Image (cartoon, rainbow, N blue to C red; front, side, top):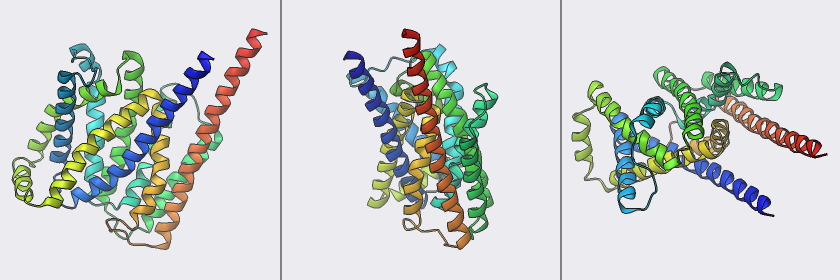
Length: 323
């Protein structure tokens, strides 16, 4: 009875983390797009999000609201690459949102499972199943077709989005490995990530020429209540998204996190046609996005079946061993 209770608690935890990440990720795309339409300094925005995260967790530790351990140099060195890949992913994603409409941005980000599978293959995880391979090909084909019908095509934006896919893959794989080997909680990974990000981001906003002009613009726009509200929401949701993403990856896996990202994209794509504008509807565009979405759903189903079959085989093997 105790084992059954533990199993149910584990399933609830997995489902909660995945659902939380899906909702936060879907909301964050629209929030980032909205604030970038008002404030185009994406690197400064990312720096503010990380600074808010680091300050909140530090305050939580001081007041006893979180049980995150203090920073250790050895762990910080191990997570340095995770932090660099994470910030590179978000930086390129924010840069792409300046020129790419939301449906196309989501379609391109659906290529992340392909990159995760390729990374898994080269790291010794073996070849994917036929269904998984075909679904990934369908997803990629959808991106190409949709791009051909995208009259607002922005080469820079597309390049930034594809680069973001690469870095997202790298940090997801590294987060999964770090969480499993070091026993770090989601909050602790967030804390390390934010702390390690700040020097890197401060260097970037100076190197890219955003600073100090970005701060002048920020102060000038602070008279607008609408801007202050979406800026505050962006900072809060940045923290929520980071937590749910690391939580989902640590509790489940990097692959589960990408599957959730694919599924939440179905709703985001639909909303993207009517929210915040920037989409010129064309037969090729719509057809490509539908194919891309179908490939994403098929991929998620194939991975679910694969995981289910693996679990069933393990149960059968255990029963056979007992006999």
